Length: 382
Image 1 (cartoon, one colour):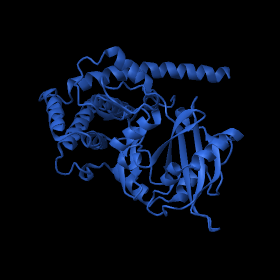
Image 2 (tube, helix red, strand yellow):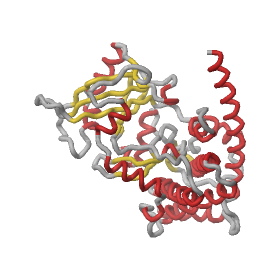
Image 3 (cartoon, rainbow, N blue to C red):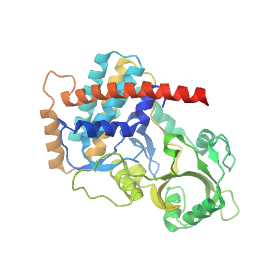
């Protein structure tokens, strides 16, 4: 998080919702109650493969998903785009134009305008490149990136830690259930009745999501019961926690955190949601999903002014599609009309969105500098 202001924004979801609570949501448009991402920043968008092999740009991290106000996702994405623009040394006017393009893409997708269904015509070069990379990736590439090797074992060390025997026993019991076996065999290339064998398992020290939470990697073999090697796969087991994102008043959601995450993922990112299963380890709720070679994180490291506009429009349309697929036609029309009404002609971006993003950029910039100061001092003391 100390590497850049943009990295800090990605890792400080709690601070975003502290700001939202302090602001009282005054002046925000109120959309229909739908599943929202809750942490809609650039790093949580990217190529996601379905069990059938289709690949599309979807929201790819749903830890914070709740039934809430879709405007929250727009503000969070706008903040992420603004800090990405600052990291690329783009002028402030570009940020205003990016927010304008983001809203234009969102509204076009919401209205179902021609070309917005897959947004192919508006894909920036960075998105085209990552989709081409995703389409050509195989298990060997995933194994080298995630494990540093192709051999069927997890390399213990800085990232992967040895399990206690009780942890191993619980994971093996979880993988013996039909729910987990059916998740692993869901890919169209695997027989439905294929056996699943655990080859190796370890605790996974994987960024902020591993701090104080359960996070495991399980290397498994599918269909190797006849003496063959089987089809290898890497399963991510991640603890599901209570969301910082506020749910809408009166919204009814699954009581269990894993079930909530999967329900939100299924609504927002069907490719991903249908590949996930809930479970419990050490009396805590967890979510299991297989990491496929095609699942990638969208990186927009350095943007030109033209690329920034195109990326903002495209990503706005991705979120618009995710929101819109949950709404009845009347709700979509009413939400679109409300957003248009709050966006007078002559403004580069809706004032409510612009004012929120400006305030958040200032808040997060100050918090980022303080984080860096404390981080540096702790390193020196250590």
